[in-house]
Image (cartoon, rainbow, N blue to C red; front, side, top):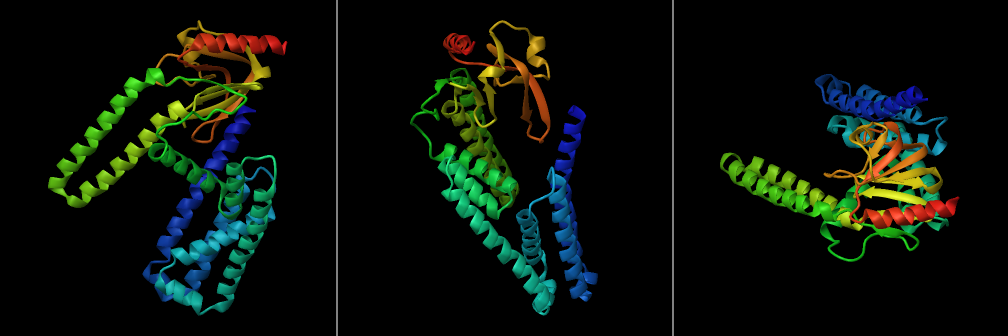
Amino acid sequence: MARIDKRVDRRRIAATVVPVIIVSLAGVAVRTPLASAYPLAALLLFLWIVADTLTLALVARSSGRPERSAVLGALAGASVTVWLGSPAAIRSALRETPIVALMMGAAVLGHVAWATVRARRALTGRGEDRRAQWVSAASAFLPPALVRLAVAELTVIHMAVFRWGGPADVPTNARAFAYHRHLTPMCVTLLILSGIEMTVYHLLLGHWSRTAAIAMFILSDVGFVYLLGLIKSFRFRPVLLMPDGIRVRAGFLIDEFIPIDAISTIDGDFGGEEVRDPATLNAALLAWPNIMVRLNRPLHRRSLLGKRTPAVRVAFRLDDPASFTRLLLWRLGQRS
């Protein structure tokens, strides 16, 4: 089973990375003198390569037969990519070939019409919160992975820029347990060092190249905003003890749900071998964990690279581990 999961993960990673490389190389090829000499042939070849690449990538990412709407979306994406990625000579050949332009336009309009119907169903459906409905609606028009990335980016920016107070993100039926107090000194130190780094880069590079100084200053600002959003997320996203399980969170970095019936024991005394074991999900940040939850069945989690790794233990650190342990033991006793 583990080998099958590894093969599937590698196939999905390849289906995400390889199309970007192929389409980029095709975009470079249509800018060569040979393509300028034969613009119509270059246009048709560019369109065929992009459409074939996106469709094959869709098939590789799908566990079964892809839906018709997804295939239509891939063809529409290929049409938009060819139009935006073509040089002036290729666009002129496209305008002089109405049948090709009509086919590309039909694919885009068909995708928009179909996506509009699906988005309307998502927005009028029940059982999901408003944010999930908007994400589903946007995923009908754009690739779901791109929508999730955009939502994550906007969430970090909103956390860093606009959220400066108020309560943490805690549902009404959950009990929150903080873990950010031991991180505060280190987080403040990181912010101070980041501010000093921004200033030094700007002053030193400003004497050498103004353009490089501006570029580095922008990159440093973006990194500072992301760091600030991550640090603030530690307070706004505590660990939650819910009626049906534990939601272990570490800011934006970790968010795993452990069902109550999957918990075997909870322990506060454990060794380093268990914490460093690959089968342990260590959610403690910059500190040694003080709670370990052992599971009676593996918890499958997905890493940043898309690799599925099972965990039989979950370790994390809380500011008040005693209260959490007492309440969780009471919940486990009620379960039996």
